[in-house]
Length: 366
Ligand SMILES: Cc1cc2nc3c(=O)[nH]c(=O)nc-3n(C[C@H](O)[C@H](O)[C@H](O)COP(=O)(O)OP(=O)(O)OC[C@H]3O[C@@H](n4cnc5c(N)ncnc54)[C@H](O)[C@@H]3O)c2cc1C
Image (tube, rainbow, N blue to C red; front, side):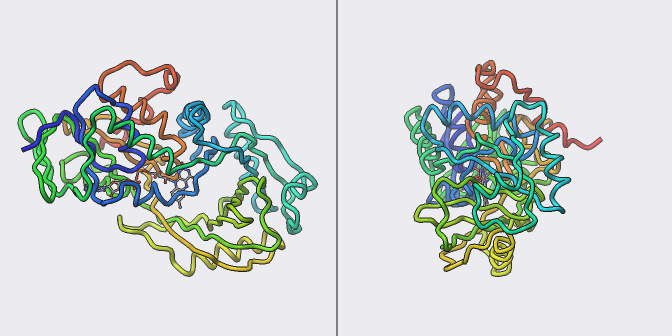
């Protein structure tokens, strides 16, 4: 039997960042089912940081993560452009209203301004909001940074270590993996799309976190996408695209197909829809579909993440429901989670955030 203070299940962005922020305050083990941490959602993201993405409940976490990401060089200039045709105008107006008092910069753009940023824009896309602070994130570097920081602080990373059973053991827990029995005072559920399964093993609250598949296709286009092009997001939420090296584009149909936790793969139909929607936005020719991938974005019922101790399973800590924003919120979420876990005061970077809005109790029955 191997003893730890805290066993974190899942070594994606959530588990890795949390382990790093706990640091040497506890003996931590990170248990990862795959041989490669980051194999699932963390390795499949669109890699951008947008303060509007995820809505007002997520924005404080995203905004509070910005200074860390900038300071450590994990983000690069990009800019965002929310565009609307006639059907999308109410959604564009709602976006402006939602963030009016938030401090997030959103600037109106007319047709001429949109065309200047997106030459070849088709008729009908007449209104927009620029989000100048939107950035690209180097996801692999951020994840590697957190894994390395956790290792330096003494965290043990066990790969190929799927947790298959969790049982009470004294005041804490006993966890079973393929080749080890581990005890820990606290179990952390950072299992991404598998959060429900892990909670069920421990008899924790059934929060109903649902994984949804999202597809990205990389295309070559003519003319090549300008390197300084912003991320272009449909205000009505039916596509986004952003430039990649060599004038390519990453394009998503903004699909959200509920899917059991799995190694998600792209469906041909979603790829075709992505390209069709793109061709209705600009008159650029799609030369080649180079590759496509899919990943799971896992949401709680109210679409805000869940951080905190389970109300009915003592020593079971939720760090799940990171949806489509688990990279851009990781620095602030990890600081918050580590403070809640260790009983430390909230650090300055997240002091203005009320952790109560992310508590698991909000999903308790009755
Ligand atoms: C197409 C797409 C685009 C996205 N774009 C963005 C974006 O631009 N910006 C952004 O911020 N976010 C984005 N996201 C969301 C982001 O990728 C996720 O929120 C984030 O990666 C979630 O991290 P995680 O650690 O919770 O999950 P994961 O990376 O999936 O990690 C969970 C880990 O838990 C492990 N695990 C599960 N069960 C067990 C078990 N029983 N025992 C041991 N290990 C277990 C899994 O193997 C997995 O490695 C996107 C996601 C997708 C799919």
